[in-house]
Image (cartoon, rainbow, N blue to C red):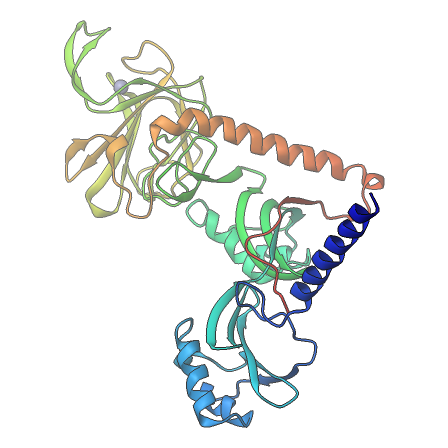
Length: 423
Ligand SMILES: [Zn+2]
């Protein structure tokens, strides 16, 4: 029994010894250097016109060491690309032998050259924390200042105005009292602000309209869409309606007409929608026709750039100020859904011509992006509802300030991408 106790003790001591050795050893199994306690580090900041080699020379390293460092560093970064204010840290041991170099030009990355038994280089992705943050406010003089006054910087303001560029003039049309909300990603490194990520949701409200932008990836990349899935960036709105719609008739060369009781082509899309639903101009352009005809009922036609024109039929009425020659912007209300002319129910008959020939509005290739893939529309509507619910929830929490220690609502949703810096 005693022998067994001694044996166990011996095994314990032996394994402890090995364990301690492993922790204090100079080189871990993967080759990274762990014994940095006795290193001497010097920090250099790149001056104007200064080169990487000049910095290394300043550190009084031997020529062959400098050559090896440059060779190793070149595998992870082009030394010619180092720039003013970038930082270089050089670490030597007590005998001034080179041990490690760190290069930083972006808080998210550290480029390392290390010497233990040989030179090696690698990149450390520093720990980036992403939080989703929310802000809302009111315009006093302009949008940029309004967003900056919340404590955020101009970069966020410009990201915001860019989302709505296609819907309104973010500079001249914005006035005192207009409201905005932004749900956005903010990235931090070690608790310090690093950069903005995506704006996930943005809204802008004036006394006439509520504009919303939802960032969504339908498989063709991330773009901003309105609540109906119309791209905020495209040249053409494909469903030029303010609220709910359903496609009741598609573009076809042969369709049975319930009133005319014969097969005729339908070179348009019919969107079934409630009476008086606002109808948007599908793209910027000049109004070339406003009038009544016995088939289309109250009709508007708009002439756009690049040989396009669009037509809106069966309107209940026209928006104020709509007349021939007027310039309208994409998303501007031009009329309201009705059933004038030959129509069995309330719907918008929407047709597009290119160089005088009818084309399928759903198949227009937008130069900048596309309208949401129709197969994704159902998911998108659910997404829109969820984002709106989230925003309303945050607003409602903010009405109970005693619940929170901070006035800004911050929500952490992701922790880290990459490893912690190990210096
Ligand atoms: Zn139709």
